[in-house]
Length: 380
Image (cartoon, helix red, strand yellow):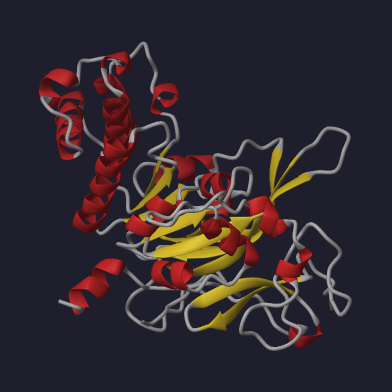
């Protein structure tokens, strides 16, 4: 399992191997105005990397910064009240050029949205306009991003609807959103997102409010399209069952920061950060009788859980925002200077306090080319 990164020190890409990441988030910090009070730091020093044909699952509770991170990559965070405080989001265009998405003009972003990066939002009924047919809405997305006439756009829209499994696309292209079921409306959203053949798909809770059968169909569809189109997927969710079945790499976020980053099998087998352990412990297990489930609150409110990182040298302490930092903390004179996203094992990163033991360490960009599909092919 080998890695390749876009250098954090400059805007140019310097690959160590042929395979290169499609997007790398580098020390992203986003805050929001709070009236007369201090700004609210929604995201603080986020780092993550995603490769083509890879599903990166970004997990965590509501309010941890998942959606703000994804929306920042498309410059959809309203400014004001939002503000990009620091960091970069480096994206590799189809022509190989690497750009910082946060520095692009609105005109340039309009070319990138849809063509290069597309997004599926949480609620299809609120994302679709009820007074326009689904065909009109898909065609509008196509004509905005492709140099085609109305007839060609309609043909592409029908092909997109057919590709996502909507029956009779020629007839249903003239239907309105209320004439579709929840699962079919979500398929319409996917068709709209994929009509322009994006290279990166941001899926923000794509199965919210759908029953489990429809969830499975939607997620299987995304996996199939990812492989067929050599597309990367950033799957934003709080459902660890969905993560276990669909992710290649998992990024766990807590209180606006990345606290753990690892291949999906590693994360489920050997979680290291207490918050990740709390998430996993809160899942009911089939065939295991329990009087009650562990709650995340029981973990994150317990100081004993945050005294030492499992398997680490003395003095390496997992980051915990809700209490005073360790006595031997060596804070740097820089943003997030008390925090290190540290590589603690092969292909495994954990968020730690910058204690005396790691006072000179720099946060390393988490970077994994791992894909479950590749592993299955190797195993035959």
